[in-house]
Image: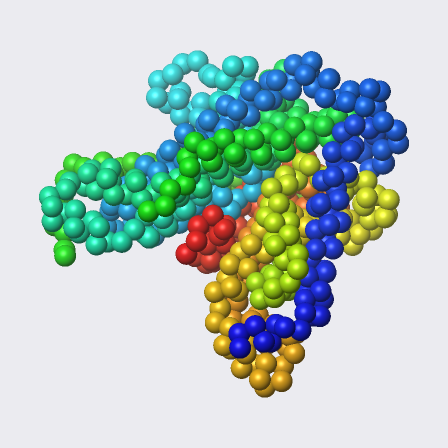
Length: 295
Length: 286
């Protein structure tokens, strides 16, 4: 009889309408509108578009000639590589280590995860203090280790490193938890059988854990790449307006910069479209590289 | 099978690496905490010692409570995040129930719309949402409630599709027999939902609530668009303004960070299991 209760379809609309009305108003409609906006001219944030740009694709032409767009694209790509290798890579190593120890699993899980619950804005302030030139924690530490010259962590050249380190650091725990859950799903019998055959711990990791984690690692990689496009709070708090010399813009912060600071709102819309396209293309690419396997 | 627990170099190195990483996650917070009790010049000269004796001062906290609207920012942030969590649970719960139990024309389309909703980054919707809310008179008004509402609405929409995916997954796994029994007793669809499905799906609702609360509480991007006057600031906008205006007042910054971070850590310690589950839900099944 299963579906009997659900044969009367009338209630379904009452259940669905509030949520979908909400999403239509605040998600789907603005999304389409944003694409249109990128072809139009908007005088200020909050006012609606009046007329088309001349030529209507003008913003996209500007984008190609805008040096900062290329800087932010380059930085975002670097950020993706850093998140992939730094976050997922470190998380894999930590997860495999924690999986192989006896005591303290829960402790490490708690401690590794906790930066994620803290707002990135607070962490931005925190890292501003740590990286202070004269003299934050890092420079004091280096000094006590015998370094005589202070390092300006926000100078050109090193600024990108200073920005990406905290972003990477914050989310390692996130992927760590996902991976450790994946490791827990691997049956103990496999390891026992391997042990009886005389496998070492390293062989267990290499020939059982890693292959069976493949799909989880794939999920993590997609999340890391698409997540890198959404990074905003921490870079904007530590390096507002792309300082120094607009060299630390990411696609997200650059979009915000034009929307809020320069009041070039429609250009911001066009940059948002760029972010969306980039997100779709890149997650397809990552999916193709780490294609999910069935076992 | 019991493994031999012998001391080995390998095991020692593994623990060493794990402990070093733990120190990098925990020590910065302790560092900021201890320095929030020191004067600015002491932070710059000697930041590693504990704030005991002469070093100890509460001046930073006096300043934080005096100059910053930190209590009102807390109130605003908690109000916004609670409302977001409640609305997400209510709307996503009903829609998820309908999508997982009813088969009707277009249900496939709605399912893909939900998935698509997860892909839209907030950057791509914020400008139109802003102009829409301005034309309705919600955004940038001086009324407290309307300003809060202007943040709540887009944040609810941003969390809905993710919440629906989590809830659909859970509700589909519930045994349908209980709903049938309720139907036999004469319950209509709404009674079945509120009296049978909702109580059974509590764990997944907790996941959704925690996720949307934290996401909204920590979000800076949406807040900067809609909360622009000091008495409307939420926690993140307040901190952001603090860097811009008092960027060199390190003691004040340390105390502000401490005031924002410590309550979250305390809550995290108690609800840790649920929070970890909530934040990673959707990425892993099981």
